Amino acid sequence: MIKFTRFIFSSLILVSSAAVCGESKGIYPSINDKDIPEPIKCYAFLGDITGDKEMPVGLAVRLCAGTRNAKATLACYKMSFEALGLNRGLAIELCSEGRKLQ
View 1 (tube, rainbow, N blue to C red):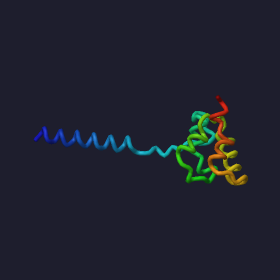
View 2: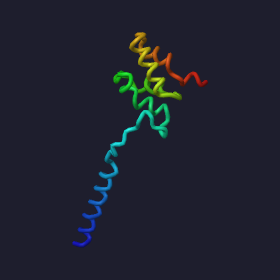
View 3: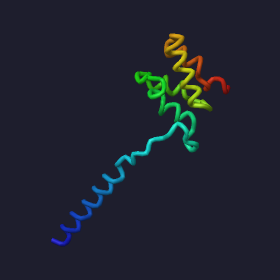
């Protein structure tokens, strides 16, 4: 009986620790956070700032890759996509910094 009780308690500890580890901490990055790289900020805030929540992941990564200023990249994309009426691909070509670094 003692072995069975130990097994039950061990199982409960393992299950509860996995549940605690899997919980979200509720910490969301800020666009002004200095510790987060600019490409990550750009990708994280793309839908919020530009309003383009339907952009495929690959295009979003292409837009944000290599950016040194997330706000400027997203503002450029928003203006070219909405105001100029460019499609996503052309707006990304215009505003992406990834190819400019080569």
